Image 1 (cartoon, rainbow, N blue to C red):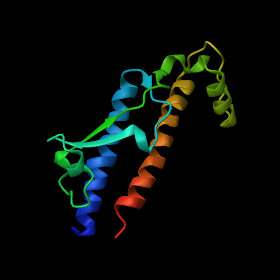
Image 2: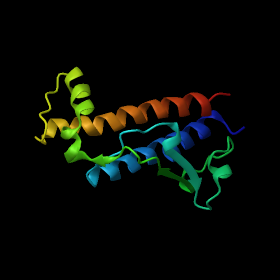
Image 3: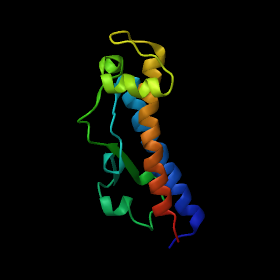
Length: 132
């Protein structure tokens, strides 16, 4: 296997950073994913070879491509305030979301939920890919 530092660099720059960029693009366009999990992050390479991207020998982050999938629960950030389960989750964090009233706080919470879920994906990636 390549040295740990090279693999760590690939995971951080090739997978984690590009995953954050993909979620950022969604949010910049007014969308939230709402169900990010391990199966939502697709690894590929510029050569469109999934075995290259997920190989333990991969160390060149510029060759990696990250795509998001599973958009079944995705929606507009601005419409999150209309979802009853979203309002209940926000209330658990002491954020009052009023149905039909789109606020900065409700938008921020909707985006934070995506980032929270992506954090768990990152943890799984780190624990499995960097193990010697």
